[in-house]
Structure formats: C-alpha cells, structure tokens
Length: 271
Image 1 (cartoon, rainbow, N blue to C red):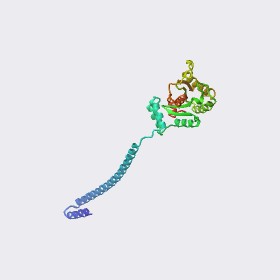
Image 2: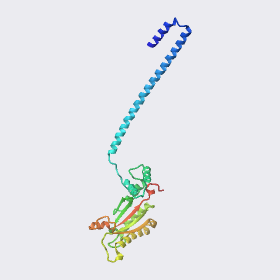
Image 3: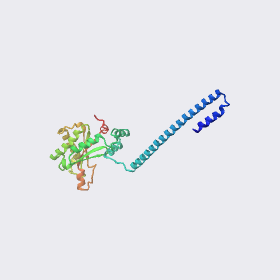
Image 4: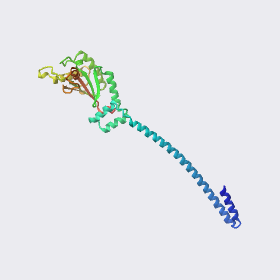
C-alpha cells in the first residue's frame, strides 16, 4: 500500500509541470507495471507452495526408502531357506539335465515358490498316496529313488518273487501308473557275500535276475508299458551301507527303482 501512496504523491507533485498527454501515458505505464508485479508475485507464491509440496513428498519417499533399506538388510542377514525343490532343481542343473535358462524359466513359471513346482508337488502327493510303508522314497541328484528291501520281495539267494512282494509292487505300480510319462530303471543290488560257488550264479546274475523279475511283473500283471522300463543288475558295487555288518548288508540287498522326470515335466509344460 505504501508503494501506491508514494507513486500517487509523486504523480501529483509532477502533475503541475507535466503535459496532460504525458501524464496519462505515465499513469498507464505505472498501472501496467503494478499489474505485472502482482502477477509475478502470485506466480512466486505458487512456486514456493509447489516447492514445499514437492519437498514434503520427497521427504516421505526418503523415509520410505530408508524403511526398505532396513527391511532388506534384515532380510539379507537371515539365512535363505533351502527347500527340497531347490535342491532337486540345482542337482539337475549340476548334472546338465537343466540349463541355467530352463532353471530361470522354472522359477519364473512357478513364482519361485520356494523352489517347488506343480510336477514335484504332484509326484510327492502320489508317492504319499501309493507307496508302501516298506519302500524308502527320496529325491537325490535329480532322480527319484524308490528302495525296497530284498527280504520283502525275495527269499534268500532267490529271484522268485514272494507272495508278500505282490502287495508292495502293487503300490509301486499304482504310483507308476499315476505318472504315465515317466521312464524308470529297475536296479538289482546285492551285498558282497557270495551265495553260490558256481560262477554262473554269482551276485551279478542274482541282481540282474531280480531286476528282470520285477520288470516282468510290472509289465504282465500291472500293464506298465515295457517301453518305459529298463532292468539292470548292479551286483555288490553300489552299496548304501557297510557290508561289514549284518544290518549294513541287509540295507545293501535291495531293489531300487530309479525314476527320472523330464525337463518338460519339471517345468510343468506337459499337457
């Protein structure tokens, strides 16, 4: 307001000596300057207000970022949970059964759900549903191992299946029927004790004949496609326990069914 009074006083004091036309031009110019001043002043106020709002938002974002940094530091200090699915997939990668890009695809497809996937979860559900309590089922190095003690399937030194074996193999057959795209190997394993002196009937022949007996009943009685079956004898050379003890030798005498899922199944791309 003070600036207006000074301006008016100045104009009045000069009015007596300034021609009317010049005075009118001066008043118009002054009014234009005052209008520009008001406009610039308003713009300055708006700019300060916007700056204050932006600064407040920036401070809020900085606080949020600090919270995120604190969260991820806490998360990084906690050891990661390694699931059975993680181990399974990493083993397949190590054996060149998966490429790094396929492994990344699995984790993306399944949302990195703890390393698990639909195929693995479904197979484990089938194992729980069908597999007999006498069979030991586990994942190892990209394979599924189903170990069955020989005392359940055969009499000593024999490769003729017992009556009890039919019930156990029925549950195994149900598992294999539930996964019709799987190829599997039936391995016969023995301990290191020779059961006969005849060279034609050693642990090699016993392990092969036992594997063949299981393969044959899965094909004939349970209608498993023989194209899916591989029968092999491993004799005494892949022990899982110490052959120096009775309990160890018992664990080594076994039939092992080795199941290998395909990359397509693991990636849950099968139809």
